[in-house]
Length: 118
Image 1 (tube, rainbow, N blue to C red):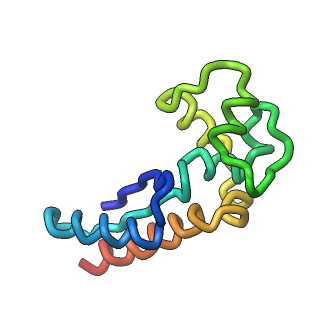
Image 2 (image 1 turned 60 degrees about the horizontal axis):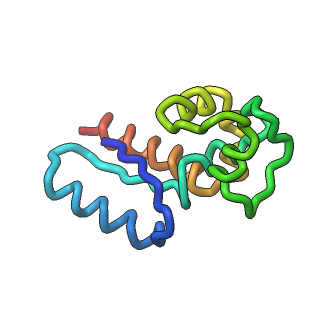
């Protein structure tokens, strides 16, 4: 089981292991918790220039959700726009810019190995 959540203002290094232990107590399958540092939109913003919404520069200290909302020119509705923008992300570029997104892929590989060996 792969669980992906926003960390918001919580410390990823503390919240991730706590959540993983809680989930493992109630499910009988391998579990990996991955937290986006701050929010999922930060992963999208790590590939800002590929989103096709008018963001041409990735500024490391800017919050993705704020930048995306400002660039859109229309209301940002997560269930509508997250899938559309995710489809446009250059994963290689975004992984280089976002440590937490890179951690997602590393943990996904670890989970796949655990499932394959069980």
